Image (cartoon, rainbow, N blue to C red; front, side, top):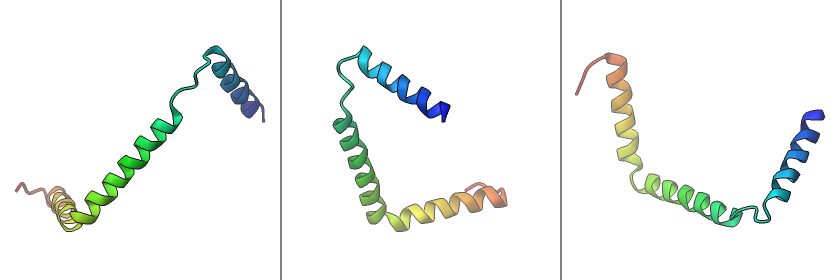
Length: 66
């Protein structure tokens, strides 16, 4: 319980020191767009990505180099 009180006080202190808390919606948009890009790339190149990862794992496990 004391940790959460301390955390709340620290957050309030940080907000009161700087009138501008930052561009939270911008960071949220960047995160969402990045996740969307990763999903889109995976959807298009799924077979190639899975094959590359499986080849890499099999090379590490067997100790051979390709």
